[in-house]
Image (cartoon, rainbow, N blue to C red; front, top):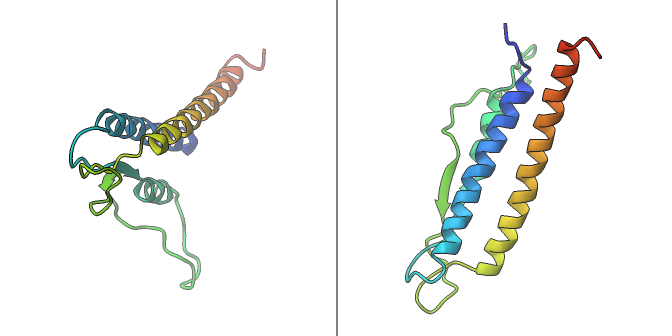
Length: 129
């Protein structure tokens, strides 16, 4: 028996993705002047696939889609043939700062969702008082 719904697991995975992406973006900004450094990003496709894999599905007809596939966790990807600066660096600081702000808003919204779910559970435990 699962004490909490799968929502908590999904929120936890999303928070881990946002945290990893924050680290990668910060690393890109820190290496903006490093010669031949290639900007990195976190592959969202793997995170989405992990969330889809956690959904319990039952095929009642052979024509239904099968959602069970094996994937690894979030992965960091690098575009090797992209260069924005003369020194071979592919970091665009303006883009990275925009990504950082967007990721921060995403992270904070996930925290608010988590707080709301925990508040609902607390309300149930207290008996609605």
